[in-house]
Image (tube, rainbow, N blue to C red; front, side):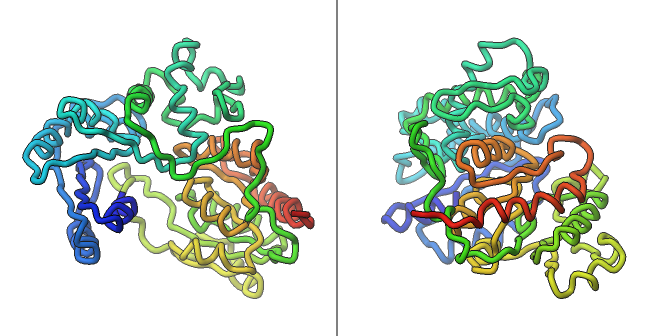
Length: 383
């Protein structure tokens, strides 16, 4: 939203970003950060709502809490919009705050969605109420049965977002209600638009580069999520066995304490996480970076020939813009849906096997898929 606000401000508009507080959110560093944004962008200001009281939410997914916070914050939003001076002329909301359209309609303010996933995922959620009415079973029970959505590649029910798996879960109900709000908005703007003509789909030119443009090295996990100790070890064994040069961003495993689930993880202890001798054996072919790397800059480097990614939409866009093919390892949210579109429709990714199981992706799978993915995309392309 801040980046969108900067675009509005560059066009001479005053922007106020309204923030609702989530119960699991650490707000300690938020004040200085927001103050720095306003100092650099005087046309952007922030208004933080007080924390709201929530009823019991029956769900294993934090998205259910987010939807409930948005609903409970509507009175604060109404008070803010009616008291603001000058009066707001437009309301822009994200996908979790569709309930705010009720307030916008009451106050006769045009409301728009800023949708930060791709157009295919937007098409799916616009069609979700129809899919819901067509079946009584949950997506989890439908398994590999294909879901047909107008304008996009059919995908297995098992590859919808995890919070959608159980139709009785509060998270699913939240997404279902949000889908109806999408249809009521003045407009929905996905982060990237694409042609919906099935007969003319192809990969963007920047992602179909000749072999001479990219070298056979791999950027692994610049933006991958948190892995268990066992999975980190398997990744290390697989990378080493693949024989490819690599850059690997390693993050500490998630805490077993539920109260720490959304807290920032400490710096990783590489000696404790990686197989014995791994760093010495790969010193000439691999580079390990702790916690974070400038992903966009890494992908733009000519030495990078592939990207192991969770298929989050920001990562997808950065990879496509850099012309780097992807090895798809989706973890959460809409990432499994993106993997289907990237692999089956656009041909920009090769998927690892086993990511949809509760166990780890095996080292042997990575050792074979990394060179396979690089080989698939390094054949000369005639433009």
